[in-house]
Amino acid sequence: MLPVHRPQRNWGARIHDVRIKGLSAIVLENDLLRVTFLVEKGTDVVEINYKPRDLDFTWLTPDGIRNPTSYLSSSPTPGQPFDDNYPGGWQEIFPSAGVPWRSNGTNYGQHAEVFALPWDAEIVEDTPEAVAVRFSVHPPKTAVRIEKTVRLVRGESRFRIQERLINRSDVTITGQWGHHITFGLPFMQPGARITVPEGLRLLAHPQAEGSARRVDSSAELTWPVTRGFDGEPVDLSLVPERGTTGEMLFLEGYQSDVAWYRIEDEARGVGARVTWDAHAMPYLWVWQEFGGSTGSPWFGRANVIGLEPFSSLPNSYFGRDHENPTSIQLEGQGERTFWLTYEVTDRGRG
Image 1: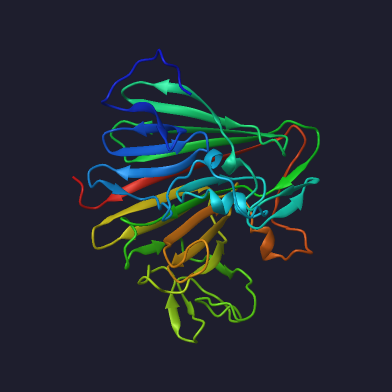
Image 2: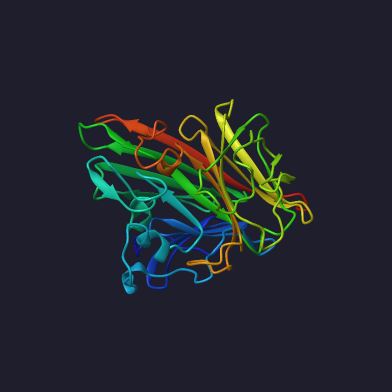
């Protein structure tokens, strides 16, 4: 954890270290935002609280945060480590995205491994004007070091992430890299709207025949309005009422160096704008779950949208017997960098 003997304050930009369900966590805070990272579980972001409205943007699962060291799955399968200990919020995903998969000479469970690992943390800036923490991890199955620096400035309702993937071997490593960002209550109300740049291409995840979904995947898909599963138009950018069928979609085709999306509750005039490095992560995954899944683990209790920048499409998009042509290749001793900014917007402020 953080050094005991360091300057401490409860004003301006500041850093706290706390424990949540027995897990070490770090809180970055200023006069507008409070952002909480579970250091001992993947640096999961489990709180982005906009203080002027006491409004949290992250979605927590119905069972909330669970300490992985205090729970033993009754039916261990490749997908269970993620599902059983998923708190909601925001996960770093590397080096395999989606269903359990085999690559780099080893087997990965759902969403691979860095989400489940404890990370190191060190303060790199600590003044009333700005604070920054560098998180780092060495996944045991993959010879890659991840460094992630998060910075929060006094008086700003945004924080910035800068990252490096560093291959610590001479062998090329294949994988997918992304940020599993979710939105839920109390922020995400029916009628909230998702906005992305014009001209993006919409893809639907393949599903087994007969599976319920919102879009007609046999038709040419368009964003935001496309042909629904029942043949009627469906506006995918609009958060629907609870009980609506869920969906798994992908957007691609960002034309500039900077990718972005905005999700806003137009009635309240408050929202979030996420911008990131389009070269490093040219895909946006759109996961929608509005209480329509009645089996485990949700039992109709999940009401969430995931808007997730990724380097690649998931392995399952191409099928079990096919390689993923969108995977990244990290050459021996090579590096990749990434940046992302998360900003809360409020038309009523000021």
